[in-house]
Image (tube, rainbow over the protein chains, first blue to last red):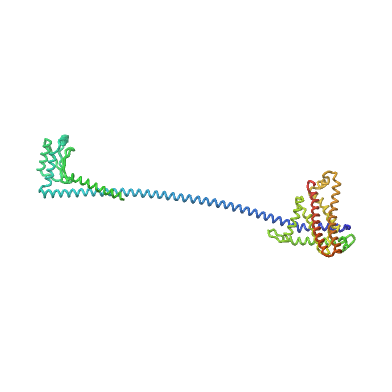
Length: 260
Length: 223
């Protein structure tokens, strides 16, 4: 058990060489590899983290976009519905107006038709009545219708009430215009004088007469003096008839419109 | 019976002699360096690595952590020295499982060489860290009165390192040799297993003590 100093020195040198060699071949490469791997792993983790963040961000963005889109869609839908509603309203209004216009036109035309019809009926009835009367008179009493008409007129003149007479007088006096006698037919002179006589009887004085033939009077006769008027014609009878008929037509048309 | 492998001399020329201790040390050095080289030649930085690399990494990281635990802040700087101490002594003691193998650590010359290396490394790392003045001041701590005791402890602990390792390993070998002559079966095996355990513990103790001495010199505040 002794120390061999050469061995000690040799072993120190050996040991130092071993330290150097192991440093070079063992510790450095191993430690470097470990560090590198750790760096790599941490960088990968960082990368993963950043990717995750990015994904999260993108997700948010996408969500936002989706919401925007949904919003827009809703707005557009709402707008479209509103517009269509408006349009519908407009069209309805237009249609209503047109319908109203059409209805008023229809009403007008139907009124026109009615008027025309009533006028026509009136004329026809007048003519018919006139013809019937004429026929009846001539058949029954072999009387001339005109003559009879005049007779009735004159009798009416004679049967004037006191206040009517007075009115007639006043009207006559206020102006010196000739008394106008209008008739549907030409009056024969004999009858003219008869009228003159009767009038003179009422007024007490002779006066000028003017005669005019107006076919519209329909077998009638009319005397006017400054606004005062005495007349007789078949149209008086006809008027009431016309009135009745027109009432009936109106009722009918009313019923028709109600049905519509 | 030879007590020390120093006594087996292969070649001699005056002061120079090549004995079994030196030859075995060379062989161990070769094994360590070549296997390290073979494994670290193609190290990978990927997540999947070879099993050999894993073993080496485990050993290196373990040594690193031990150094760190004792209190040295940058273990990479000291692992070359401390790690080699541990690996060399450990491997030298581990090979006692081979027949006719005589560990170099059973030679007082070899253990003395290792202890002297530690003795020299303490001022080397201390001066490297704190400068010459700072290092020398650490001998005056806690008071200048402690200077002789500090110096004595410096020498005595080196001696203790050398003798402890030598004594343990040599005695282990001796016990096995004696037992072989008394009870040649089974018992020597058990003692050999115990010797293996003792050898690993001694490698650990030696390197840990070296670390503690270095740490004592390197730390700004003395322990």
